[in-house]
Image (tube, rainbow, N blue to C red; front, side, top):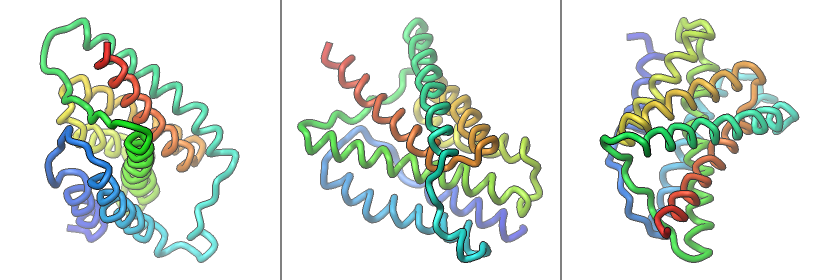
Length: 208
């Protein structure tokens, strides 16, 4: 197997298909996850992407492209998520697992920071890594977008069929914006804000 395919596969298995998902929440567990999983994993992916780049490309700067990406991505993600959630509420079937319910200001700050780091990790691999390395993977842009989207949706399959569909559409949106505008930070922040909004809406709905 070509080394780049093996590298991509190992990263996918280790970062997204290992371990189980749980609705339990604690500030300490989230801090440990951010410190010992999210940050090292993001650093590893960025190293693997940029190790062959020139020195000036090691620092990935924010720019207008990221504002554009954010302003397009966030509304699209929210519309997609709300539409699928509404459609799912009208049908019977397996529901998505419950989300953690943070308590207090400290709990909400922690979950918001965790959402941003989780989004950066997913965007680093599914968009930045897979799509940026498409030439090494012998993929054209549409094929790279398709592979990225399918793998992204598969690692959300634990959310049920509606969650899988939501992730699939979101993957297409984020991948297209990354390709069109070369926006990484914009889509990562939009992804994180979408996740935070999901927690807020879930908490409000649960309290009604």
